[in-house]
Length: 217
Image (cartoon, one colour):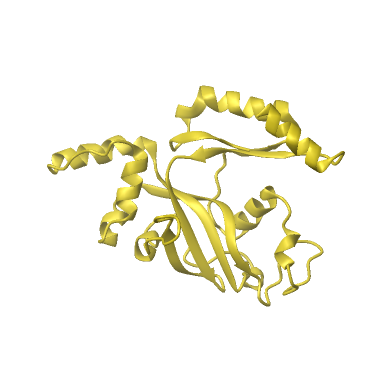
């Protein structure tokens, strides 16, 4: 981590450096495509090139908006919201009890349970499972004629998405559209702050609502 931070400092020179740190969710990657603010497609990572269409199932997950919130004038022509679907840990045991009672094998862990739930052929089964989603980034983005809610950027300008220069701005943008974002992230000013984040969740990893498998910096 220290060697990486040294390379970052070398690359940026004397400019101030801030780090966004967040827990890495142990779940299933999802891409949500919105056109003019409306959810039109939900796709898993699949084999890395071709994903599996799970649109109907995604629509059953509480918290994923069918229509983006906020001012419709700020909704891009097209935006791909990337995130992670996970199962709430506190409800995982109850799900496994129901599986066993139904004569089915229990899930090995919440991640497997989330993956199996999201890929059900019957969306009603997905709807019955305690799934949630947190967004962690943006893929494809075309502002079209929308007015990007980022200061100093002209609507529809070439490269207008360049007005978003910080990951924390991405999260502010998504929250403004009612897209769920993890509360377990923080911006720190130095490497000491990064180490404190890592140490905190090394001790408190079992106190949050989902499994985690590391810290993203």
